Image 1 (cartoon, rainbow, N blue to C red):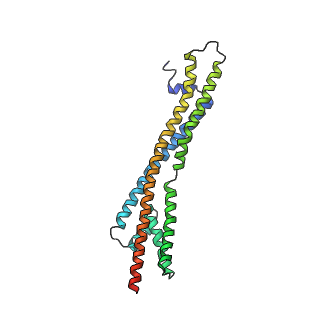
Image 2 (cartoon, helix red, strand yellow):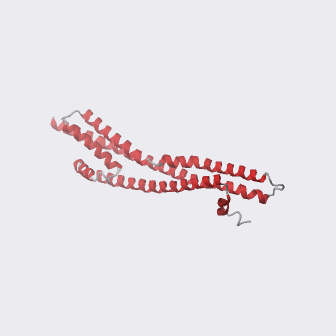
Image 3 (cartoon, rainbow, N blue to C red):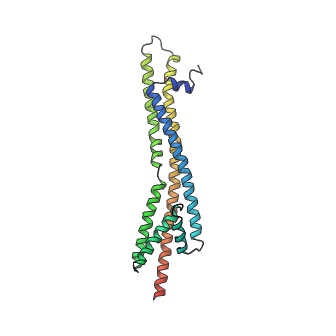
Length: 230
């Protein structure tokens, strides 16, 4: 009896619809775990690059030197460094056009940094919608397999004269495996989604704080240049 009701045996003897549901959920689970590990390493890398650049930014290095370094390392730079580079690039372009109004210069730099910030957040949030979908849909797909399997089991029992627990149990057990696989796919996806969403929110707050601090530095520099010019 134990051998007959082993997981492998139940999967092999399930109806083709239930087997198709199990295969789909297994593929979704594998894709979900791949997305989880990719996102885990991506967020870890983003936080490390942001922290390194923030330390360098506050170390006293000149803005021009930081901008030169950010331009050279554009491909390997972190989100904060790219946001800084976009703000400095727009700021310098406006200065080259002989624009001296502090408000215009600051608005241009802020708009460039906000656009870069949005691009960085879009990249950071990629695959999160997939994990959310896996977490919300997988249990229902597994439940569909279970309902179909139970219907199939009871349809097969209709022709029997005498029905006992030993004849009912295998069919129901086969059907319940689909729900188990659905939950196995959904639970890690939901946990990972919640953790990643919290981590990305922290990254977003860090980047927004940097944008404000860098804007203040640019504004102070403009004020100092304006004062010295007078």
